[in-house]
Image (tube, rainbow, N blue to C red; front, side, top):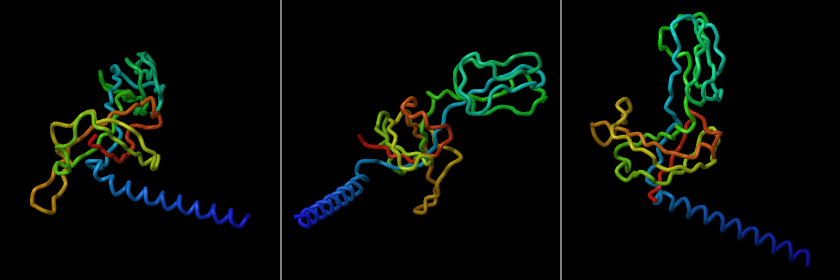
Length: 205
């Protein structure tokens, strides 16, 4: 009886493994029909400078990566305290104490997490005409391997990236690239950071 049970279990496991392999193969065969294009990209947020007054930099009170509230003191220039106007994350600071600042020169730079987007760079000849606002997006981030994140197409650039062109071997002209911005729930994915590299799947529906 024990031998029969063992054989039955082994056969059942083999059937399950075979079914999984077939299902996975069918998924990857059908996947290209579901998504338009898989561009590379980066996580980016619009940054804003925190300007100081004229005078020497006496003290920096924040570091890159710090989350700060509105009206947080970030530096002291001469005898003036420099504060944030809004909440955000510090991404860059001046570190040269004693440096003489001009009026309005940035002592630090910050971003707002809610502004974070995945920015994909799509060749003009790779289904760009089929990309629409609101389309579903799945993306992965190099820092977290194969973990999948969900988003939607939020913005499609109206002009090409002038500095980024791709040589088209089928002709003499260069293929231009356009930015596609993907919005996602930054509260749901707090581990995602400005500047990370990503791979993007934009789906037709």
